[in-house]
Length: 260
Image 1 (cartoon, rainbow, N blue to C red):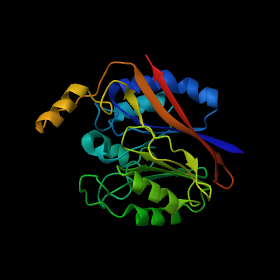
Image 2 (cartoon, rainbow, N blue to C red):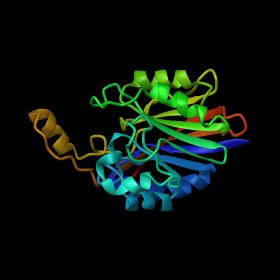
Image 3 (cartoon, one colour):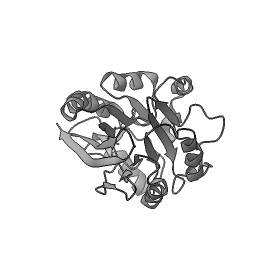
Image 4 (tube, rainbow, N blue to C red):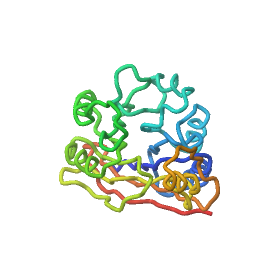
C-alpha cells in the first residue's frame, strides 16, 4: 500500500505561512496525503522558528517540522526542541549539548534531519554521513525513513543520496530555496531531489526583499534582510509515494504552485 508524503520547501516569513494556510489543506485532500513534512527554520520573520509560528503551521496541516542552521535564531524554541514529544527536529550533527534532536519516530516512520558541511559557513559540525550511519542503526525497525538534508552543495547532497540509497525511503534537499528539477528514484529505491525550494514571495531573493540583498552585494556592508511580504507567492514541494511495508519509494513528483 502506498504511503503518501508531501515535503514542503523552506517556509519564509509571514507570507510563507499565509501561503501554507491557503494551499495545504486542499492539497492534502486532493492528493490523499498521509504525512506533511515542512522545513520551518525561516518561518518566523525570515530567520528562525517560534512556538507560535510552529503551532500556526501545525494548525494548517504540517505534521513534522524540520530545520537547519537558522533554527537557533529564536531562543524561545529551545525548550520545544528539547521536548521529546514535539514533532520539531534540528540537524543531528550539531555538537553535543545543542538543544533538541535530529530524529522523530513513530508508527513505523522515522524522519531524520542532518546538515551538510560544504560552504556552510565553517561550522564545526560532525560528519553527517557517519552521524546518519549511527542514527539509522537505531531505527532499523522503521520501514519508512525520510531525510531532510540541509546543505548548500549539490554534490554533497547527491553523494549523500547515493550513500543512503536503499537504506532510506527518501533523501530530500533543503537550504537553497531554489527548486531543482532532478527528481528521481535511485537504483536501490530511494527517492531524491536536490532542493525542495521554498514557500514565500516570488519577487524576492530567496524570500527576502530584493533591495537589501542587492545593497549587500554592491557595498559589501552588513545590513538587515527582511522577508518580502507581498505576493504573488510560490509554494514548492514534492509528493513522494512509498511502499509502507518495505520502505522503497514508488514515485516522486514536484508539486509547485504560484498564487496571487
